[in-house]
Image 1: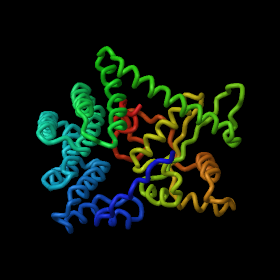
Image 2: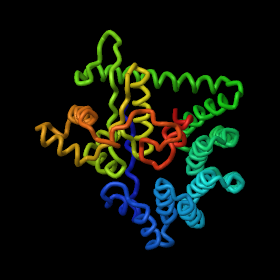
Image 3: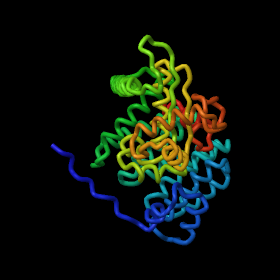
Image 4: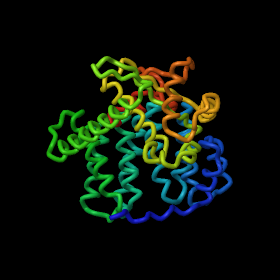
Length: 345
């Protein structure tokens, strides 16, 4: 039986603005949109986006101010603003204020009827707290989300959120030295099975890539992961719509996929794993010069291998980076608090 058709999300003024951008918008552009559309239902969303984009540049105080503006707005996305506030307060070492902010958000959620948006907020708060090393707090939020799901709120994504929260809970309980229960062990087993399947698929793909010269006798090889830069992500997805199932709908999902791919290369025996950060323009120029079809996946793979071997300082990085060094995904955060965060691995 085929899956039921999912209706397209309605176009809003803000989504139209995002669609008109060439690549990822700037923090200034998002803030300017919010200024020009004060009172719009998505004013908070634009400010939240501006806040996260500003956070990447390392300006925590400015990011915090944007999140605080968003929290004062009406509409669904003011809840997401509180996540950003907590994240920035922890990043700025304002721990007492961060604790107070998350307690306020939890009280607000507990006082309101359960809605789909709340599960998204809870799951995101678990991630923020885990990355900040606040495992006990993260576990409390995780359990709160699972309790809401057990109570049932008719959320069509309930199974997805339950799966995500159970995996998070298993990790957090393990880090805190709490004995895992049957649900934790089942989530851990499912996650391990998923990773094992991913590794098998990767090894099968590697065996069909002679350019990587994967020897049958187990000799080590180099693993190369091609990463499209953030600014080109929207254009890349529009260029190859079929890539959505691989890349995901947003850059964070895409980065997590690449993190898993890099880890799978390492586990498969790669002597070195290199992440190649390239632009779409560079790829198109390569395809033109080499006389290759830019629309096929083999050309993208060949481009990544060629790019890694032709010397591009600062654009070909060994994986994993230092835990306290900048993350390879250009988020502006330390690796250990971004793609290297335990909850994502």
